[in-house]
Length: 174
Image 1 (spheres, rainbow, N blue to C red):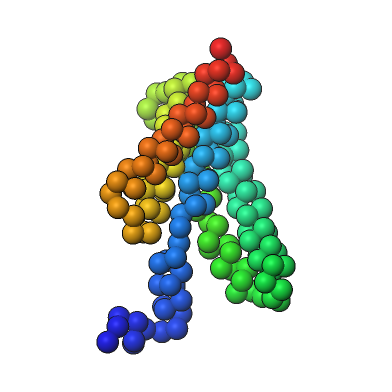
Image 2: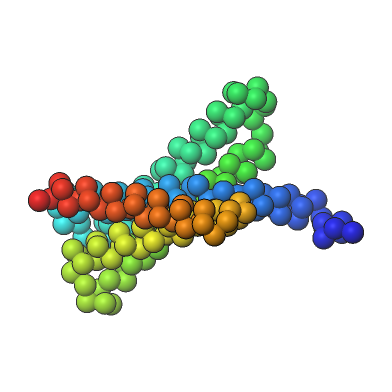
């Protein structure tokens, strides 16, 4: 007998949703956070609170955009009626975009405790965002049943993408 034989329908739906989660939003959100930090630093010095808010609010704005695209795009393609369940499901599926902005925002907020200036804070926050990007992609590969080799490849690709964003900062500011 399976583990879901005695589970409630809601528990079964939750387990199914977790099983098919691909973490794409987390990878995207981490890359977005790194880009926000790089962009903010390139345009001048941002006070910490502004950078924290910029990270979190940008994550929320992109989350809303992705929910909108998923809900309305899927409904148009599949010609199904829009319902509350579909909206809530899209909100949950896309939430990793916002979650990915939190660790870099926490680093920025906590940087005074480490006695870091804004430039050092920005570099540390970008490093955390890139590490998140690598972590989300590796988790997605693992959840998808990828081999260790494929997990290493996806981690390397995402690390290179993060380093590409960092190289843009170096190129633009020098």
